[in-house]
Image 1 (cartoon, one colour):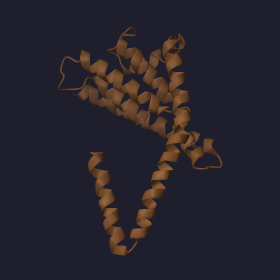
Image 2 (cartoon, one colour):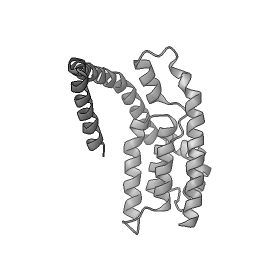
Image 3 (cartoon, helix red, strand yellow):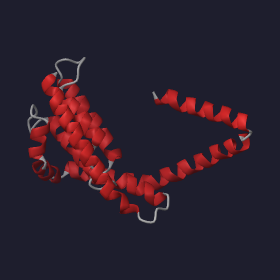
Image 4 (cartoon, one colour):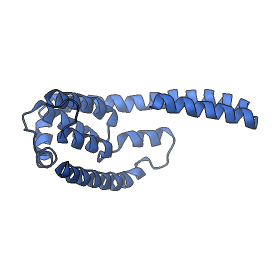
Length: 191
């Protein structure tokens, strides 16, 4: 879908630049945007490497078991059909921990892996299970205790107080999670 939206925006921008006589500003903005994108990518690369490394350590150490025990009551409520020893249970737990730490870049491959495992065990391949639906809701809302990606973006853009975003992120993600989980639980009973 994005491969259709972005070219549309670029074409509209080009046409608007021609009509308004701003073709030189359009060209300059293309090159400055490319430079900014590369600069931002380099700045975020270090943060991504750090948190991906931390998640790999968590995954390989006994820390995952300790964290899994902490969020076990939540997992039983959210995924009642899953057993603690299941492969997808561990993958979902790691994904939730990554999201809690605000490292969506590390959480994405973990989430895809968990969805693939759940789909393999899905008896009806044409329809998602309740656990898969709940997992999608959790990843969409993703409660973040430390929004590291947003903090890194704010730091790279020269924000005076990069951590100022933490409280609004907590409030918005808690509300989004409560609304999403409630809606999912209600709709799962109806359908």
